[in-house]
Image (cartoon, rainbow, N blue to C red):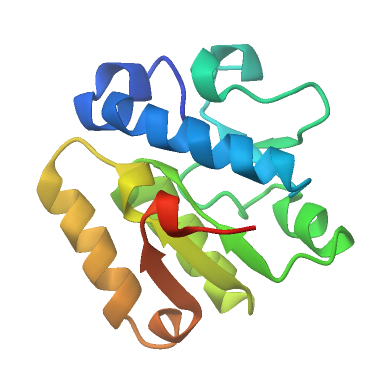
Length: 153
């Protein structure tokens, strides 16, 4: 769950529109006891995450720029739990989603991107990120684009 913050997502209509679908996906992940990791933006805390998709007290979070692996313990969190497939959703599609998803793929993980869970300031950025995920060398071989209602745990 990448950067679903009041400070950014709350000001982006496409991100706000994605919240109901992400709330359902989050509920399904939690029901399946899947690990959920959050990222937050600079100068915020987990209390600033939009309440409908806010983390529980025991869900880890990282704070970084667009690549959530950079200067964080995200890889350790995932490896310690034996996670080989990640679902990447959040805002901005052409920032945190693209860079974190791509980095996960480059680190050997399988990446699932629900397109109804990625948003940016403009629709072209969303299309550009989706295009990159399905066409970039190597990254495209590790990435599946889908909708959140098609993801099963």
